[in-house]
Length: 193
Image (cartoon, one colour):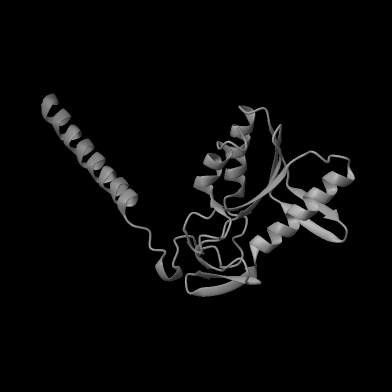
């Protein structure tokens, strides 16, 4: 009698386990539908800029601990009437790397020359200022502030990082950006190690 109850319990357990395993595999291998701007991320288009910034910062902090560097920020700077915002900055022997995170989902369209880029997400379109142009201005402000403080030999770099989970970047190869997956490998390159 007891062995029949144990066998029934084992069968139920295996059935539940098989079902959960099936759902897990289906979730992993089910393709993301981000074509035509659709996204599983339901944050309204235009209001998802900061998505993923905290997660990227934590990855940068982990990298910094093992490379004698520090992560500070968010950073707000003003110089000669210009303003700059970085979600965080990585400071080390290599200089300063100002990082701007863009958590936009859906499909992003733009070029380095266009004043505004377009986000197409879940049937809604919104525009935002060209992040490359904004980043160039931010880099100028960062350099200016450091020069004014007497830090002439300190190298400065900036990075635009797309941190959205469901993002399709319809951008030319000439546009300087990276994704969250490419950020840490960039830090592991010769420039920062």
